[in-house]
Length: 147
Image (cartoon, rainbow, N blue to C red; front, side, top):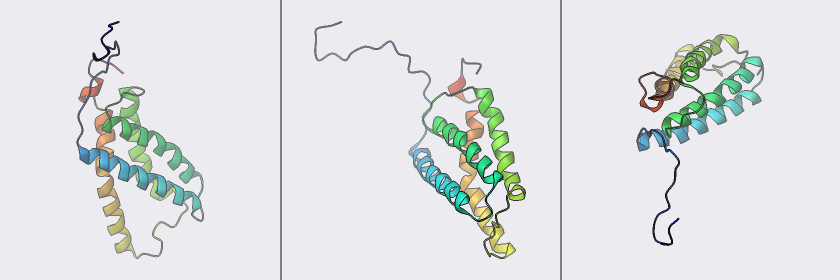
C-alpha cells in the first residue's frame, strides 16, 4: 500500500466485459419498467383477474431483470437461461390473450382494439429485441463464458 494520498487505489476486481448501450436504452428501460409495473398492478386490480395475471407477474420479473442486465451490461444466471426465457416470455405474452378472463378490449370496437394492441406491441419490440440479444450466442457480454 502506498503512502501517497493522491494516488488512486488499485483493485484486483475484474470489471468484465462492458457492452456500451446508448442513452436511448437507459431511458427506454426506465419508461418500460414503469409501464410494466403499473400495467401488472392494474391487471391485479382488474375484475376477473386470475391465474394468467399471476403467471404474468411472475414471468415479468425476470424479464425486467434480463432487460436491466442487457442495458447495463451485467451477467446474471446463464446465457442459455436467457435464450430459453426469451421464447417462454414471448410465447406467454402472445398466448395471454387466450388465457386471461379479463375483457381486454375495455369497450373498444375490434378495429380500435387491434390498433391499440399493434401500438403496444410496437412500443414493446425493443424490449423483446433486448431480451433476444441478451440470450444470443453472438452477444459479446457472454464471450469467453459458456453460460
